[in-house]
Length: 93
Image 1 (cartoon, helix red, strand yellow):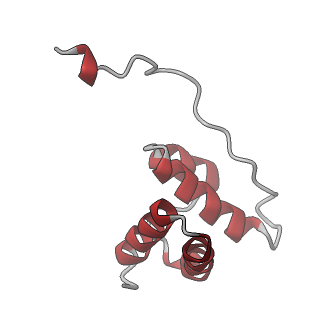
Image 2: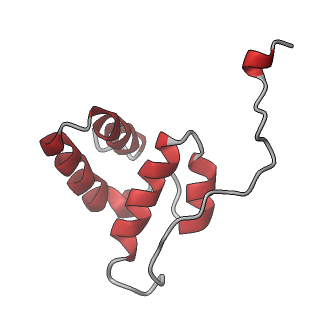
């Protein structure tokens, strides 16, 4: 197999996400940020495990929409794309 297709850092530590306690009112927004960050790193599963939310979870529609709009305003096309993928997965787009 070509080395171009070997993930050499496989088995490393999972990414850590800075999240408030789950009962915090800020938790949903932080979880939405973590899911987008995980997707941006190609590791959505770690973000899902860390947050307890799955990709396309309808409970985060408001937060993901907010993050999409903020990313659009600052010209962050990658986060806009990821947020729109999340919204499509939730059946919102």
